[in-house]
Image (cartoon, rainbow, N blue to C red; front, side):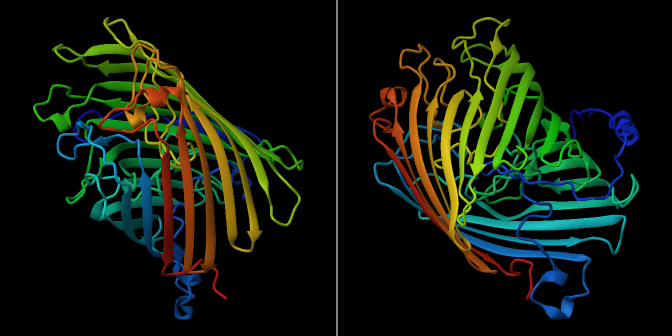
Length: 506
């Protein structure tokens, strides 16, 4: 945190306005989960954590001040013809070597959590450790799979209960911490991946998610994962902003106006290639609204974000960095219907859009950058293969979810993908035609997933996804790979163990 500290927007005026509004002092639980597919934020503390008084250990029924968690996950992944780009773990350069043989990867992750609350109030604290490892992979090991013996959360918190009204707290948190916001498309922990996004800095919350209004503000530096050494914050980058949650307007609808900014003081000509980065100063106001259409069975989840600011750009052989105007837009729309049936089937339609850059040459300093910045988003809602994020994309999708048996959940989805800008890259696969002559159709994907909770301590899941390439993708095939003229297959089998059960002791 030694360079530029970001001046966050003052919350004092907004807080005074909120307190002055009528009917905002109720202690009822107004929080409603979204029915959107895989966009509900993880809980705080994490979902595997249990209050010790609610575990299987009856001798600790009175220990309500201690939260504990210990879980282990193992996943076998089979990937055939994986398109995703890979980077050299030392230099950060994009690798062009692909294997003809399928990848059979074993991923192991262990997490542990201890949190103290209530007994020392207003002081609270929490620590969370993670050990993530991979085995048997064909490709270079990356920090997406490996993060050995790492502290992923370690923070102190001042928690002032009832200071803003009955059951409406003020909390000030400092240190290393997780952060999931909105629908996770911009900021998420990425729990599906073997390693976890986290940040260092400050988070101040006015109220909590159960209140009819809740303001969540933050100023944080992203943590750089290091596979075998201790992680460290990116001291050149800050992410900051706030989310205002309004829930009393309707019992069915939650409104979330928000602002996120990201500032990087880069060094594009650093002598160490892995440390090179461009300047960036992006402002991203947005609005998310989700909920139900009354008791009709229909639900919706919509998010729109407009980005502007400045974006640094460097070209080979040019000793100065271009300072481009950043101008990007993205939106996400999902609507579903839950049928009145024992299987609780929900059918949904989705459409996602994110702009891509229009100028492949960028010859003038007066140019602009239109690629939407997906920040630290969670990509699984876009693609089971992890091929897409919220940038340079048109992505319609249809999905069916249902529960045919108790504790067994199934979902199947079909989606198609187009480039928004034909001259901009498909970033996750590192494929690009700057002439735009290859068209825009990337391909379509079918995925299916089953999840089964065996008992309070064990659950397992399996999934299969097949991506069929479109005209653009086929035209980018190379003799050395990726072999994009052929389909891509992804299968996984996963088992989760939780030492403290589901927190519902018999």
